Image (cartoon, rainbow, N blue to C red; front, side):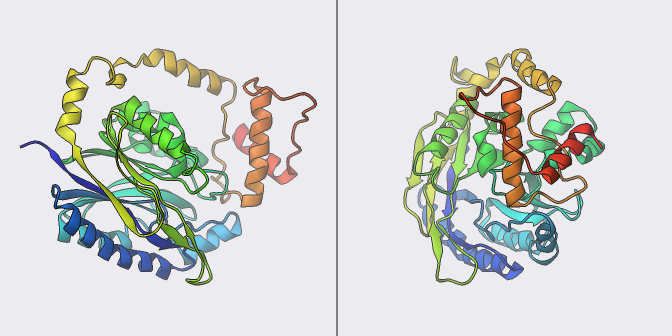
Length: 380
């Protein structure tokens, strides 16, 4: 029997969490959304894979500095925890794999830090995959692996294969090999390629907020990931999010999509609101193309020695983004994150990567931010 089935992306409305109760509002609503999706979309082929976008469970609990610690202690759930157990019961009920995301704490990795986590639950209700978001857009005050890089080196050593598996894990399942990317990290081709080189056949890539949906930036990225890596891209978005302060203000989103391994959009919903996308995923067809195709199964021809030189050169020049920023302190506040952006732009000009226009002067950086960056870059 051919390995093909229906996959679904749930486009639900969610809440910007200010308490753990907001997470549960979304979880309980999703129970109904998933039930409907399985009931209706199985008219094509049985639904075996369901996904929920970033922000679909509890939105984003954002805050740097002391606010980060308050949110850690008072708001966000733990993974694994009661929330993933609840979703596990849904997976058992409907015999599905579920891909989802939550802003959460992972104390076994590091206490007092909040992470943006994608996860997969199997039809037995077991948590089989977690992935820590590796990069953010500038208003997200969570913790990335590079922010606590010494912890990763302590846990996995400097073995590149172990670090690759830790940063870009892929769940090898009976319905295909599934990897996960969360929003902004899908803006980096290296992140998707990291999953592909671990065998990913389906990449979950949660979508952006506006204006990067309406201008097609996100779609171009996802179609490129599909083509470059010969994989499906499952890309749900939230339908809208209720902002803190009640149910009277909701900011809409939308444009959920599923893209096949040739880069074709095979399902999409353009508007906001509660909705879904569903498409037939043919894993055997993908595997056949990868093995018999001559050209567009591109990863087989990667000349890795050539590409490695790019990053070795940047590391030799001192790296790009400062690592270990959150080893001793919580993430920057949103205000200080802007200062970090200024530092990064100055650095790119200094390295000769960016060329400044005439009469440009380097940005002045807030002293406390500059000092913290200096400490991490010096290893102190």
